[in-house]
Structures are given as C-alpha cells and as structure tokens.
Amino acid sequence: MPKKEKKIDLHNLTPEESLKYEIADELGLLDKVLENGWKQLSAKETGRIGGLVTKRKRELNDEALTIKG
Image (tube, rainbow, N blue to C red; front, side):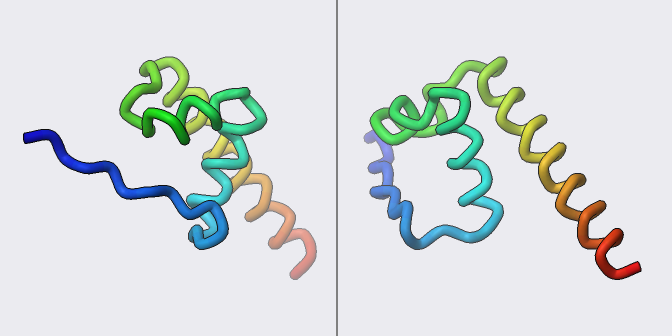
C-alpha cells in the first residue's frame, strides 16, 4: 500500500525547508514539487537544489561572521 504524502504547508516551514522551497521556486521546480513531491525530481534537479542550499548557507554564515567581526 503506497504511503500517503502529507500536504505541504508553505506557511509553516523551518528556515532550512523554506530555503529549499525558495530555491526550487527560483529554478522553476516548485510546481512540480507541490504536485508530485520531492521524490519526483531527477537526481540532477535534486543535486542542483542541494548545491544551491549549501552555497546560500555558506554565504549567510560568511555574512554573519563579517557583521560580528
């Protein structure tokens, strides 16, 4: 029996999830994710999102360090 996918609440996300959805939207993949879930993305699409999430986190950490010090 297939698992039921839970409905995505875009207004109640953790900061990391929010970043992931934001990047998916920028890449034009948000509609695909909302309709079919993350499992329907190709490895290339998923890797691209992951790479950009990592890059953004690094940039945010660098900004925080620059501001502090």
